[in-house]
Amino acid sequence: MIDTLHTENAPEAIGPYSQAKIINGVLYASGQIAINPATSEVEATTIEEQTEQVCQNIGAILEAAGTDFSKVIKTTCFLKNMADFGAFNTVYGNYFVSKPARSCVAVAALPKDVLVEVEVIAEV
Image: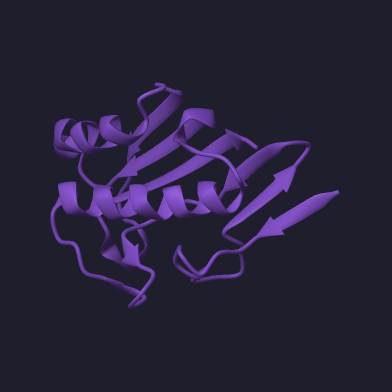
C-alpha cells in the first residue's frame, strides 16, 4: 500500500505531484524549495536563508511522517550555482548530522528561480 503524505506545515505542491509518498516504511519526499508555507512565497534571498527554509520544509514533512532528520537515508541536492556549495553545506550540516548518502549537482534553473532544492528518502 502506498500512502500519500500531506502537511499544512510544508509548502503545497506547485504542480501535479504530492509532498511525499510512503511505501514499505520508506518516505520518498518531493524536492523542497524555499517557499514559506505560511505565505506560499519565496521570501529568502541568500543561499543560507533559502537552505534554512528548505530544511524547515523537509523537517515538517519528516515530522508529519513520524520520522526525523536522523532517519534520512539519501538526499539529492540541486544548486543553481556551485559557488554556493560551501555556504549550502554549512546550513545543511546543521540538519543532516547523521550524514546521509548524498548527490549534489549544479543545475541551470530551478522552480521560482530559487537557489537550492533538496529531496530526501527516509526511514519511517
